[in-house]
Figure (cartoon, rainbow, N blue to C red):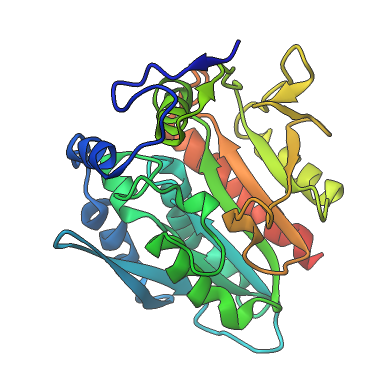
Length: 304
């Protein structure tokens, strides 16, 4: 049943203005450290990989350098594999899984592929454990020309020279219980829309590109992840988060039309992972391991 959002900020049915966004922002507090959790880990990788700063966010005097990690033996004749994490800052295993992949497995692809990893696209959101940036903008709906999200614009600028050379892009996400308790109600309130109670799937799933579906590629990732954590079943309607399940653990979105991160290149193979960290059957380490398994399977399939 559709209901007007009872979110504590704003007037039901009326989109937020400057005042409502300022009220929302005043309630967002730092809960963890990007520097401690992400930047320090990147610094430890500098001896083995090329690390570059591709942008800097400045929010009310808080500065966040944005880092990318590349294969040291970059060769123009090799395919490019793009891994992005932390587009939604609250989705912890996206950032941590990307870094764990680089640390443990990136060297395995030396001489076979060029790896480009942007492990934490939204550091402000990472620190606040939030989906949006300080302007109450979702970076993962903002990958388009003249993007209002600095996070999205910076990543697009990084990737632009390689847009046609990327063979595979995997974007690492999570679906959490807070999607239903906080983020969807906040979205409805922000936009002055009604909200409909949804169901959070218990387990891992993938989002393929409905404009360029690659079912065998998605299946290879699902098979690899199933050895680490459980795959989300379809709900009673045969759906996951309101989208038809097209194969076990796989739904589809039009990536470019929705301005999603996984649509920023012309890669043949694209996927968005969705780990479920709130499951009683999954630990934080399992969630990171699932992201790593997904990245490895995606690269291996693309290379094969």
